Image 1 (cartoon, rainbow, N blue to C red):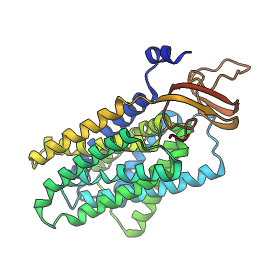
Image 2 (cartoon, rainbow, N blue to C red; image 1 turned 180 degrees about the horizontal axis):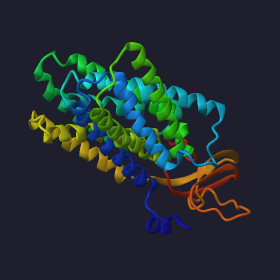
Image 3 (cartoon, one colour; image 1 turned 135 degrees about the vertical axis):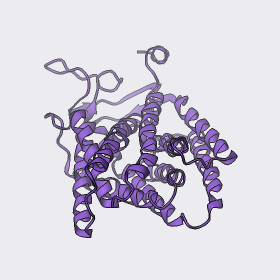
Image 4 (cartoon, rainbow, N blue to C red; image 1 turned 90 degrees about the vertical axis):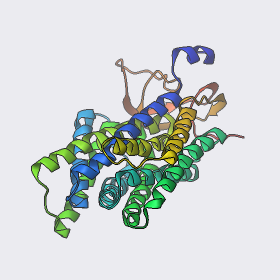
Amino acid sequence: MAPDAMKTSRPSPLARGALLALGSAVLFGASIPLLRVCGNGVGPWSTAALLYTGAACVGLIGGGLRGGHTRLRPGLTSRLVVAAFCGAALGPAALAWGVQRTSAVSASLMLNLEAVLTVGLAAVFYREPIGRRVALAAGLIVSGGVLLVIERSGFGSVEMWGLLGAAVATIMWALDNTIARPLADWDTGVIVVRKAALGTLISLIVALISGEMYPPVAKAGALVLIGAFGYGLSLYLYLLAQRQFGAARTASVFAAGPFLGAALAFAIGDRTFELWAVLGGVLMLLGVILHITEWHEHPHSHHAVEHEHVHRHDDLHHSHSHEQPVDGEHSHGHSHQSIRHSHPHAPDLHHVHGHQ
């Protein structure tokens, strides 16, 4: 299909990725103030275990129990374990600890640090190109977060320990995003359920060792529900977004989540917003718009390669045949011939090439 035809018949992979990342950000951002309310009095490790119990349920619904393309290479299995330790155990436990010691607005805003770290790590480890547009978008989002943090700085040092807990969570999640990037090209439901199960197990063991009391049934159920949407479904969408347009862009759009969390905290009673917050929100919105409207197309080459990952047959790169017709996503070993062409693309598995 000619590039001009694709522009009218298919949405840009950059737009699809940005919308998936934005959906993930909305779900996660909404979970932060709800976590402060429903997790009050619950130990941080117990909270993390309950959150990822809910996330595991989403993974099961998303296909984590079905057979088929669920095998991971040994290198990816080790990545999954490390990512679960950082992102599904230490990260949520640190946030749960921090959000109980500062306002939901402050904790939400501190999470903007995750985007900056992930964009930098993706550029270093995956050579994802960070052009002027992406850099400007990330800069606008982070600048918005800085304005919001400035607005909170007038509340003194009482909340600083809580902010430190949220900062540790962002570092863990940035490492998680970077380590888990290759996992995005495999079965998303399988990855979510395995990562969530590992995180739940680790958190539960630490909670038992540290003597944390199990919360009442109502609070436990609420935390499982928050985990199902704010962590499980959010992670599912996040991995799909990474598959569409890479780790750096996903993280930058995902940075809208902290602002959404702060807005919800304001709506449910944390009414501390002033002019700085409004200005910060406008900057974040502009950054997200830059991502959603990004269009990247130029002639580029693909070298011959053999590999295995989840793929479809309507993306201009997987035109091989099957003995039996196959629809939708599937995985098997396959080969690509050398080709040079031009079409809209993003820094996904097949487009990690250099730019002048």
